[in-house]
Amino acid sequence: MKKTVTKLADGRALIYYDSRDDVVRDAPDRRPLDPISTTSEIRHDALLGDAVAIASHRQGRTYHPPADQCPLCPSRDGMLSEIPDAHYDVAVFENRFPSLAGDAGRCEVVCFTSDHDASFADLTGEQAALVLAAWTDRTAELAELPEVEQVFAFENRGAEIGVTLGHPHGQIYAYPFVTPRSALMLRAAAEHRATTGRNLFDDVVEREIAAGDRVVLAGEHWVAFVPYAAHWPYEVHLYPRRRVADLRELGEEARTEFPQMYLELLRRFDRIFGEGEPLTPYIAAWHQAPFRAAGRADFALHLELFTIRRTSGKLKFLAGSESGMSVFINDVPPEAAAERLREVAST
Image (cartoon, rainbow, N blue to C red; front, side, top):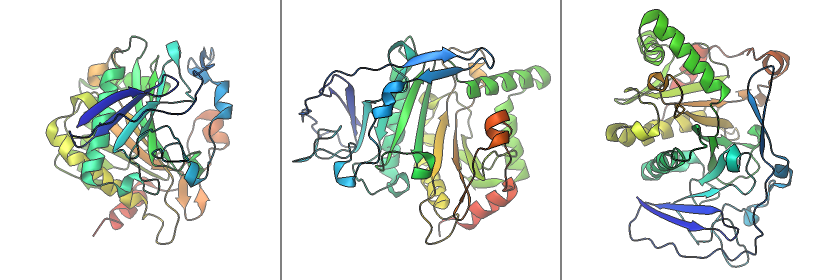
C-alpha cells in the first residue's frame, strides 16, 4: 500500500491509499474554496449522561446531487470534486460538513472506489483489503490525537438510511468521549468478568458457535452470526476468532481472510429479499475499544451489519418503544434471519 498525504484548497487533509507503489498523486485542488467554518459543539444531557453534537452548519451540506455532479467522483474537465485526481483506489478526506470538529473531534469521509455506480459488495478482494488497510491506518493516526478517545468507522448505504450521496463511501468519526453504546458494552464486560472471571465477548462468540443455529458464515479466522437478541430484522455480527481491541491489533491471517468473509456477507444482504428488489439498505459499523477507557483489554473488535428493511418493500421504523424508551421490538426471529442468510449463500 502506498499512502500519499496532501491538502485540499481550503486546508483540509486528503489522503490517497493506492495498491501500487509507483502511483504519483500530485494533482492540485483547483477549486476557489473559502476556509472551513464550523459550529460543532458537544452538549451533555444531564438526565441520560450522554453527549449530543450540535452542528447547525450541516444544514447546508450537499444533498442528492445528480451523478455527474457527485463530489466524491474523481475530478474531470468541467467538474471539480473533493478528489482532485482523475482516478483513485481509496481516498480519505476531512469532511467539509463535519458533525465533530476541533476540540469536539474529527470527521472523515472514506471513498471506497472511484466507480460511482459500484457498491462495497462489487469490490475485489484486493480492493476490500485496501479499504481495511485505510481504516486501520486512520485508526492508528487518529489515536495519536490527544482529544480523541474513540474511533468509529462505518458505512451507511441507501436512501432509506438517510444517505445523501450515492457514491460508495463510508465515514470515520473520532469522538472526544466514549460513546454511550461502547460504555454499555464495557460495563457489561466488567460485570461479567467480576461475576464469572471470564471475558464476556469470548463467551458470547463461543455460545453462538456452540449453538450453531444463528451462525451465518464461519472461516478459519472470522465468524459471523445473528446475535441471540438481535435488535434489527437482519443483523449480523462479524468477529475475529482471536480477540483484539481494535483494527491495529489484527494479525495478518485475519487481514487476509477478512475480504472474502465481508464481501460474501454484503452480497448475501443484497439477496435477502429476492431478485428484482432494490439493493438492501444497511449500516456497517466497526466497534473498537476506546483508547484510554478502563476495561479496554476486555473489549473485542467486531463489525455489526444490519438493515432497516424487514421484508420486501417494508422498513423497520423506530417508533414509540424504540425511540421513546430504547426497547427494540424485532419482527424477524434471529434464527429465521440466520437461516435466510445461509440460504442466499454464493454458489
